[in-house]
Amino acid sequence: MKIFRLIIIMFCLIVTTTISAQKVLTWIIKDKVTGEVLTGASVYFQNKDNRSLNGAIAGADGTYKLKVPDDKNLVVVFSLIGYKTQSMKYTNQLKLDILLEEDSYLLDDVVITAKSLEKNVVGLTSRELVSATQKLSLDILETAPVTSIEDALQGRLVNVDILTSAEPGSSSSIRIRGTSSLNASSEPLFVVDGIPYNTNISDDFEFATANTEDFGALLNIAPSDIESIEVLKDAAATALWGSKGANGVLLISTKKGVSGKTRFNVDIKYQYGKERNTIPMLNASQYVAMIQDAIWNRINDLGSSTSISLMELLYNTKEIGYDPNWIYFNEYNQETNWLKEIIQPSNQTETNFSMSGGGEKATYRLSLGYFNEQGTTRGTNFNRLNTALNVRYLFSRRLDITTDFAFSTSDRDANWDNPRGQALNKMPNMSPYYIDADGKRTSEYFTPESYFQGTINKSKLSDHS
Image 1 (cartoon, rainbow, N blue to C red):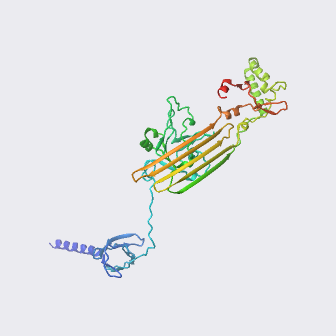
Image 2: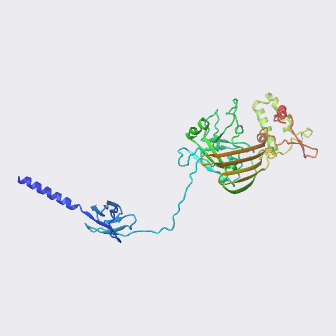
Image 3: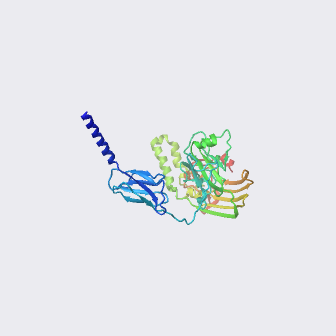
């Protein structure tokens, strides 16, 4: 029995020691001026590292109870919205009355701003889009020397490859995330102001061998009439536009009229281009020597007894020989750079005029444009005339009518064959014109039906004459 009493006494002493070790800070928080109790004030401890430890909230009567953590160098912090925050060093107090001072500011003014949400042609804002899209505003290109949409997009969109041609008026090939098929079309779908830009394709059309001009997607739309271009690159294009958008979609928004005074805008651009020097070619004497060496090396390989035709070619070919009595001796003893004969400086001129304005109910925009481009290859030229009219009338909040009218016509001059390829293969000792008795060129082209490099197809010439 004595042992049991001893155990109970020892347990009570341990509990009393533990309870007495847990210090509690308490009392009341009031307003410094009015003396009213403050409800909802925050009280917490901070250690020397400015870490917040135990915390509490003052009750309806302004009192608080906060356990004191087992740490040294503590600071008690009191804070309440609308009052200045106070802090003091804790020195083992058990009761602590605090008077908080009101913290007020005088506002100079209040500014309320509104932000408009811009939506695309499918009615979604940029934050609502969950697909891979990219938008390009053409405002930054107003002063850039671009004459087509393909030029404007070149190098400005991620994962969009644009293959352009140097010929005036030629279209370009646009690939979004690469080529998707070898036999079918890989061209993206163009949507202008919410309307798909369809391309009629015949049943016998061969995609594998077609060039980019067969599509002619957006060649005749002037960049000055476009507000922005948005590219849909992933499955969202198919979800919105079906199988036509399997290769991606280009959403194009054209410029519209705005309310206000009538605005006139005239934009004139001029661009001059000149080709860089090409790869060095053989001159006339070097070319003749190379041909003669090639024939002679072939004779040595086969043996002279079995190379009678090659011997005849080497010694009796007037074009690579030297016979002053031959009628075309002067025409085949010239120094001709065939690339220089077909290359010319390039000139581009573009003039655009626009007029826009309107009131609260109706807005309008009228644009006219003329474009002319002279290519760097002789015989190539492109002209384009385009006009566009946009009229919008707001009858009510529920009825809004918009009318768009666009017209474009173009004329393109191009060579029926590849003159540059021919220029690289032509004999540099051959003259492009007949040579008169004084050794000067005439205005008549020198085109023999049969010569050292082959025979001219007369029927092909008649088809394209």
